[in-house]
Length: 171
Image (cartoon, rainbow, N blue to C red):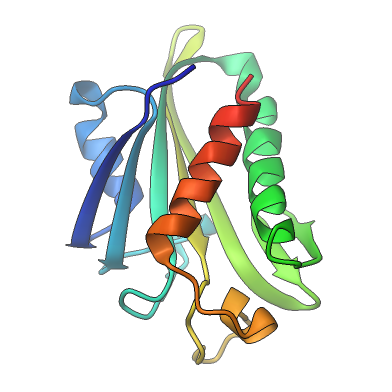
């Protein structure tokens, strides 16, 4: 079973950018979590705005992954997130290319970035932005677990559950 290393920050430009800049000195299964990202982003460099300390903002580093496993990785991450959200009673669906929705509102974004050389990815970085306790969203049709369930969640406990799901189903 993989050994997880967790790095936590009050603020970082982006959890994925941190891993990209430092991946050579970090082990596979390093997770970076931040209370706030100054340059959080999604697909196509779209900005990911999040209230400070209210949501799960994290990225996972995988190293030396065979090129042919990228589709498996996407499915693995999706199923782990679906399992987590199902445990809170949420009925969610995936909207291509990388979003998780409840009804017609975005709940979670997944951003997978890679760098390859030869037959393996030097890194696969999986960024996850999951709206937990945020109430207001500016100019965007989004929701949070709190808005859907009226339950305030502890960010670290949610990360712990997600990590357990990922490890349990890692191929």
